[in-house]
Length: 328
Image (cartoon, rainbow, N blue to C red; front, side, top):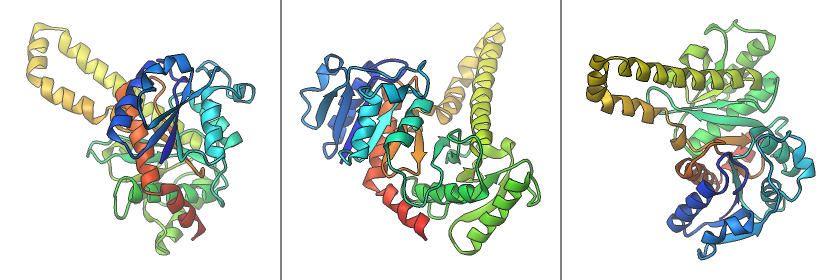
């Protein structure tokens, strides 16, 4: 197994990536990490037998336009993806700009045959602790019902092979639970997913509303990229604001501070349940290699989680499973 690592594109530079690579390489001797970046910043990895260093003098920055990847062919991000294109690696991990990463993948990496639209999938933490896969979360501005059907198959196969869920429940994000809700595309998607349920392709459980996303009632939630991105960022923002409000409320009085000390274990338990660092990052679904996008501000723990997700995808031949599932 060979995994390419873009070491340079994140908000925090190469330091957390190097730390994550060092720990991961020591824990997974059966995997070779091809770490791409400025050689002088990767010196501490040279003594590891299962690490290869590829020098890349350019960086796709968070502030760059998505099309800058065309100009920055010598960047760590583009070099890592070109290795996937040439079948030199099985997967790629980056914490760079989502737009630039996705654009570069579209330009340089092949899609699985039969996939009309690739998409971005995020795993959201849920109240029941199981998590739910939401796709698309922003790769496409709009989608057709048929594309949502493909997303349902890919999300379901991912849950079976990576999350070890035997019969994943698939829901359609909509403005109401009833079959007739939503615009024409969503009504068409509902009918298509229902037909796919009858043929055994997916375990479709109906519509789901935005307020129920984090309950954990569905393992996979399919949506168009526009709605999915709003849903993702709304839930992230709401979680941050709620935690901030709780903290400020507890710290505003002596009684609150005493209560905070008593409730500290419970508060940290909730915080850990919704911590993005343990999720492993978002997936570029529909490509013929495992492409994982870690959070832009990933520390070493978060980036290593993304590497572990890539490792599991390759180990379980998830891309091959997607290819076969989409043919059926």
